Length: 203
Image 1 (cartoon, rainbow, N blue to C red):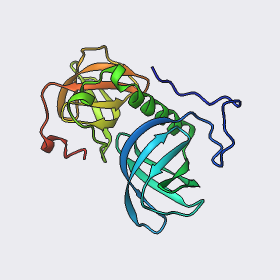
Image 2: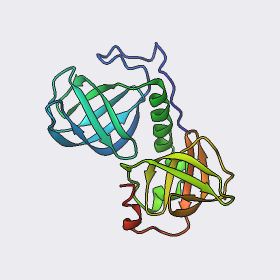
Image 3: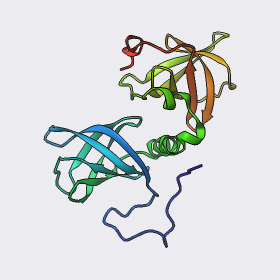
């Protein structure tokens, strides 16, 4: 299983961005915006909780602020630290809590085959724009939560509680059951494949 940790001083290379975390290959598509509000499609090739490497036709300047929306990760932002022939790298601007969330998300992505998340294998996952909702248990207890990503067959949910595996739940209006626990929350498999229309409230 992949786990993020800070790179040891001996292992660090003296690079301009002064990388303090190990990167993992992710190859995630997204869209970014430059300071002048021009938008471009992009791909994050590799990333850590502290920095990210983009392939993109955009040519920002050193130090410029970049805002990006990346599949499965949502919004990230930072300043350009490295320029190269195919893109650039940014140092992420984030709170410690945000970095912890990114570490959990990236670990999950890196280990998704080992975790065997059902929505990963059957349907593409989407990053919702409306992430806030509630997870409701059979006994009526309701817990606020945040959807990390969503597909026609399931969702990854950032939540403080950990219902037992197999527990029937309702995420918004979608019924399912808890199939995995991970550091940030739980994975829910829906009782039936949802229509795209059913997801529009979140997308």
